[in-house]
Image (cartoon, rainbow, N blue to C red; front, side, top):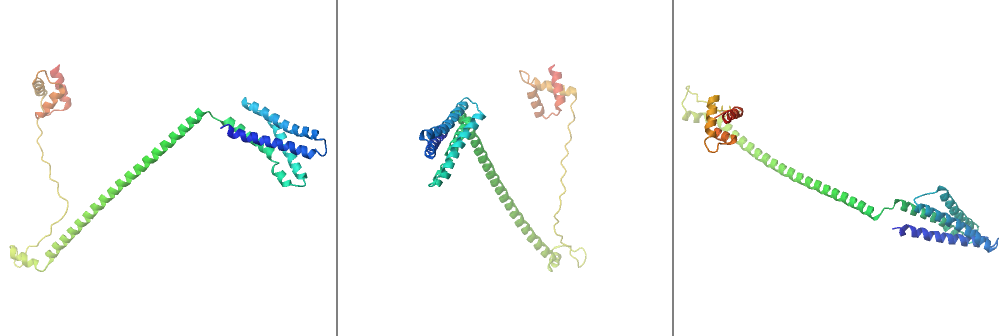
Length: 287
């Protein structure tokens, strides 16, 4: 992973230094002796490289120096200025020289990116833990989505079933109401018909001469509830009688019955007593 950021920075640095040295030697070689131009080019590149090496040393120690960074950018801007000035003064291929004048600044920017990567780099163990946490979160989210979809589908199925059942009930009620309505209409038509009176006269006893008893239609209405049969309450047992019954049931078997068994047999025999009185009688007998 380190090579992905450091190799481009090294390559850009080498290209920019060679280009700067070549431009200085070609540009100043006609005005001053070429050794002097070579020294000037090496000075610019040397200052650029020295500050870069010192910055890398401080970065390896986890430190940072603002003056060194400023000096390094100064040398980078000087190299860029030399390339731009040479491109502007060149009579031929000025555009091509301007196109490569940004290489020193680009090299400094790549080293800056590499430094930021180093300050934020994590160990393989930490990266693995982060990937595990992210995968766990994705799994939980997927399970939650699946659960929600399943619950939504179940609720939709339930609502569909309830709606269908309600529709069936409504249809049955509608058919029943229609049948009752037709039956009621038939009864009313038969009651109000012209031949009803003569038919009743022929099958019923007259109450008054020339008058037949009226045929009343059945009335649908509330029904009076039938009162429940009132059972006579059994007389309450006295404490003595209760003690005697508890003692007899308790010693009906050997060994003596427990309270729960005694209470079950007591009530199965048809006797009645509150739980409080029955437990009090048990305590008096068992004491």
